[in-house]
Structure formats: C-alpha cells, structure tokens
Amino acid sequence: MAQPGSAPALGAGGREFKSPHPDHSVVLTNKEIGVEVENKIRAHDGLVGATNLLSVILGVTVSTQWLWIAGVVAALQILSPVTRFCPVYFVLNKVMPDTEPVMGRSKV
Image (cartoon, rainbow, N blue to C red; front, side, top):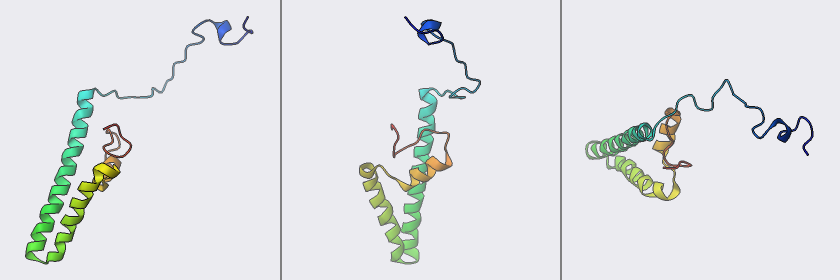
C-alpha cells in the first residue's frame, strides 16, 4: 500500500501540472521548417557563389593572388560534408537563431 501523499496514493494520474510558460510558443509545420532551411541554403549558395565570382574577377583584373580565396572556398566545400562544419552555415545559424540549424549537430 502506498504512503499518504505519495504519487500512487493521489491516483494514477497524480496532480495535473500546467505551466504558464509553454515549451514552444510557435509550432512550425514540416513545410514551414523546410522553407526556412531552404532559405538558409539559398543564402549559403549566394554567399559562396558571390565570393567565388568576386575572387575570379579580382584574380583576372588585379592579381592572381586573389584566386587563393576561390581555392580556399572550394576546399571548404569539399571538406564540409566530411567534417560537418561550414563557416557560412555557422554564421547563418547564429544570425538566424529561430530557424532549424543546418550542418553541425543538426538533424539535416
């Protein structure tokens, strides 16, 4: 037999707890999360593409040393699936904290 005041003595359900502060104030559907991730991926692709294009333009017009930037960006793009780290996604995840993270410890 349960002691007085213990959870089984109060009944199977015990006391109901209702928090005035819900865990999640906004519930997003899978479609909305997909749009957020898609927007973050587009921002990533735009930044990487602009960096490569600027590097090539500066490499042709100013100095070939600017082509090192395009090489570093390409190397990071090759290594990021293996290391699960991308500097651009790191910054985007910090700038857009209310969205689903991409890369790193995410589920994507």
